[in-house]
Length: 546
Image (cartoon, rainbow, N blue to C red; front, side, top):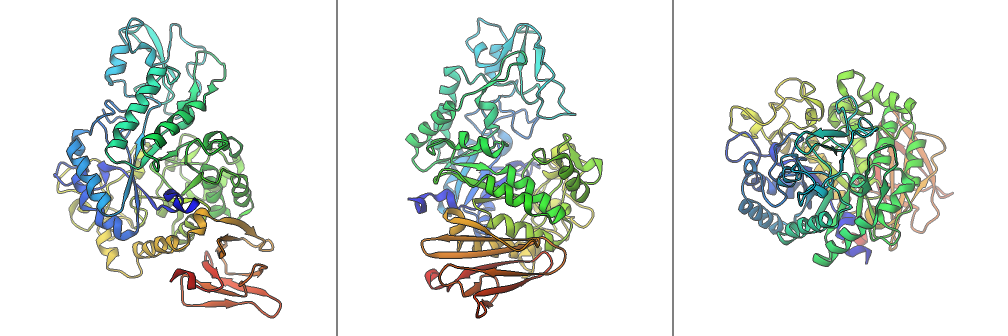
């Protein structure tokens, strides 16, 4: 059955419509533009696209303040354009998942505007209110240093409303059965239009039951099970990909004891320790994080990633670990955000091609499903002159044409990067497609390699002892096939000594270059790795691939 779970070995590509491709020339990306780039995504090897919110919105928070759940923002096209996009994606074998943002709405949503009339309104109980100013009105902010409160007075309603995020994003009262019914209706609508599932935004906040005062909110995981049952009833192979930055011992609650919660969850815990390993070459905490997140239901899956559309969150590291990552990858105050993260793109943060390749090879080889962010396949940079998270949300760099080939408009949604080493005239898709040694072509090969190694997504794994050197060695096996994958976090070359006991391991076939490693008479492999080097091996031979 495991082989039938498509999400176990998907390649997920995250993009934001407004910064991907503009077809109508208004400076904002749209569905017609995305349709024109589906062949590019297909050639890259992507088989699942994750779309950021595209519904009607005042757009104060990158579309995560939704005004209408049942449509398309006119900036991006029409519902007809969405259906045409879905048709074109399915023709190419590309599945589509979309953001499900139901922890909160925009304060411009008709539900909230109606709720402001007061307790006699049908929609009043769709939100969380307090007649008096709560004692914890300025606690629990998601964006410390920027956000000032979690309870705000609405003068028309003459009551305080709860908002875990910004004041223009009032939280829905998910304890209300009518709200949960509406969430199912939203899911059903988009499933009927062909989406393969949802990336569920802010899962822990959907499940909490907030109340005024210092009382710890109760977590209602049964709501997650309700969503899963409805999803599976409407579309059996649809998935939920959850955003839940929680500790490993809490993850079972989200996946479900019997695998009846969310299907996939972003592995924030491993992600943060991965960057600590990249910054320090200390791999022990990364190994501990991998082991801590090992035991999940067989049908559940981790989504592994490096960067996303937000800051690199380091909140799960110790203060000492976090400061070391700041010192290496975000030493300037302008590079840091919310007292816990770094607002930089991957390539400028890591600073060189070998470390970038190491990071991506590692991410694609970790147990789970890989998720990549648009533009990272060509090594796009960031714009730290933009506010907060917008630094990593600049338009895709397609060519050296004006506005990076993103749009013919004179002014675009965010400025393109036109200065420095990451400027679009010399860093773009068109140029890299013609360069056999480009990051784009390397990434395309890596994606193809990952598809040839389904053991990573659905097999058993163990971490091999490398005698204290900063090399992570992982062994995967499933249905008689085995992989050995090595990553050297050191800036100096290393030699790894491995003694492998499983059958057919005297011969290791390198999957990246035409080369083999043979064990000595004692069954010991001695394998060399360059500085920041990585090697993927299949034990035995490759006959099962043909």
